[in-house]
Length: 274
Image 1 (spheres, helix red, strand yellow):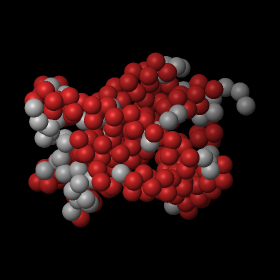
Image 2 (cartoon, one colour):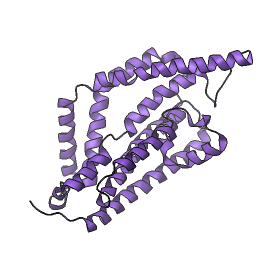
Image 3 (cartoon, helix red, strand yellow):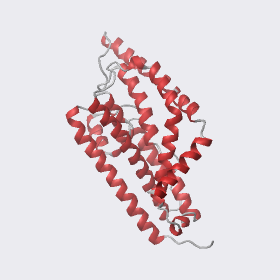
Image 4 (cartoon, one colour):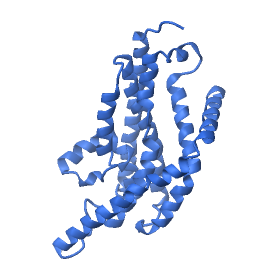
């Protein structure tokens, strides 16, 4: 624990020193939502004109819900996104840097997890201001206000597990570098699926029923759609325990898969030179 605490504090200090751009970067990240607002306003307006009245819902979402949904998915993706993690692991394997984790008393997966935790802590410590500003300006889109306390706790739990699923999913992909020296193509395909199937582009309830049933079985929805849907009350409260249990099961699966891939990968790894 002392070792892990030292790694976490060191990583946090490094990021707070050189990542002063977090605040500006966070504010700029919300700019594409303006386009989404205009797009969905046009969609709702067109359907309303065709039907002679404004539609109450599309896929279970009203217009204001849709805007709030995109704002919430920005928070969820900020938790679950792990840029450069898989490619970084594969590069360390390919270039032999992974040897240092074999001769020093530091676990590779634990070390990378702590650096990502430090990254998120530093990010939100600085970016909380822009987040608060944007949500304050868009407060009228959250017509139902804050969810009940149990739902809010479930929302926070889904964010934490989404972060861990995102980490161990990408780390598992990175471990494939023990067998294939280049994982860029595989990572591109994964990111493509993740972008569409996580709900980052649109709510998953807009999918056809048969496709939605398949997508709901996959883990990607926990990276963006599920936390936002929980906050907005789109998941019935009686279903929350089961949904969180399924998310925890996916998390356990990826933790085990990552560890197995790492252990088996080390058995076939060969390091030469200094």
